[in-house]
Image (cartoon, rainbow, N blue to C red; front, side, top):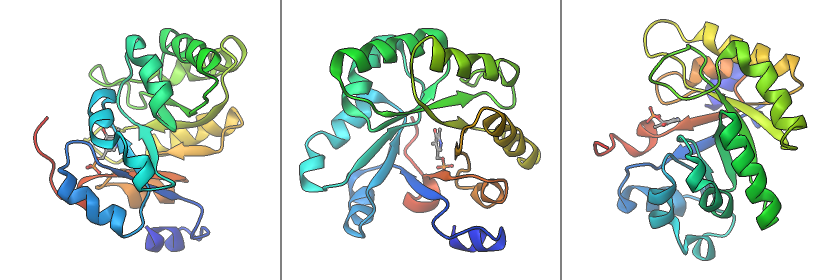
Amino acid sequence: MHKALKAAERPIDSAILTAVSKNQEWAAIEPVLAAGHRRFGENRVQEAHERWEGKRDIYPGLELRLIGPLQSNKAAEAVAFFDAIETIDRDKIARAVADEIQKQGRSPQLLIQVNIGEEAQKAGIAPREADAFIRAARETYGLTVAGLMCIPPVEGPRGPYFALLKKIADRNGISQLSMGMSDDFETAIAFGSTEIRVGSAIFGARAAQ
Ligand SMILES: *Cc1c(COP(=O)(O)O)cnc(C)c1O
């Protein structure tokens, strides 16, 4: 990560690592905590709860980020539990999260997920609807949009997708870009990523879902 930041002539602290602990055994996660890392990504509300419940007292500064799809019936639990939700991607979720923030007085950092390759199987707002959705998130639902997140298609070069996410962020005055995983974080950093989400390159292969 530092090498990629240097190569891109970016400050070493201009991108941050989210270690993706989904589907990992605690035995794999514990050494990463012991080494001092505190920022983790999970893709399911329930699984995250089971894994991390009670751990905040043991590991002060723990930061848990939801990077998987959120259902509106899990919004209350997600707002109560996570420090960041990176997958706001439709009106129903924006409204449910806004309601819970009001109710609970707790405000996780919020990112909007963009379906940057317009893939049917992936979550996220379509790129051409992103500007309007960002505006609605801010104006209609009163949310603070901290950043944008994407998962580009597996096939072909990733650069153009990362560049497109940055372009959408820039024109909407958004500075945080959550992009880049185990196999493409160097490219993502070259294209301006401020948060990489890396699982298997840290923990090894995960158990099948
Ligand atoms: C699983 C996952 C990652 C991490 O993927 P790796 O290839 O293991 O680094 C990153 N982001 C999201 C949204 C994921 O679901």
